[in-house]
Length: 88
Picture (tube, rainbow, N blue to C red):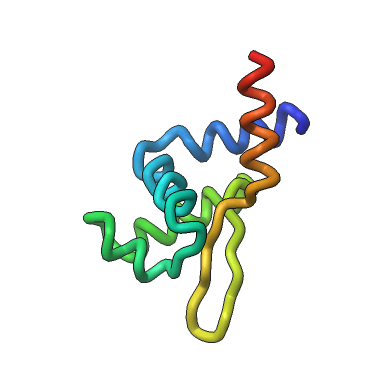
C-alpha cells in the first residue's frame, strides 16, 4: 500500500468518533447508517460526515440498497494497514 493511501486512512482515523464507528463496524460486520446514529450521541449529518471520510479513505465501503446505505469495513484494506503497522 502506498504511503499516500496510508496517510489518508490514518487521517480518517484521527478522530475518536471515527475510530469508534470503525470498531462498531468491525464488531457487527455490516451496518445501516441509521443504526449507527442510534448508537452515538450525534446527529445524522455528523455521523454521515464521519462515514463519508471513512469511505473516502478506503477503509470503509458503502453499498446503496434501496433507500438504505449499508457500510462495512474493507477487510483487505484493514489487513494491509495491519501488515504495515506490524512492519513498524
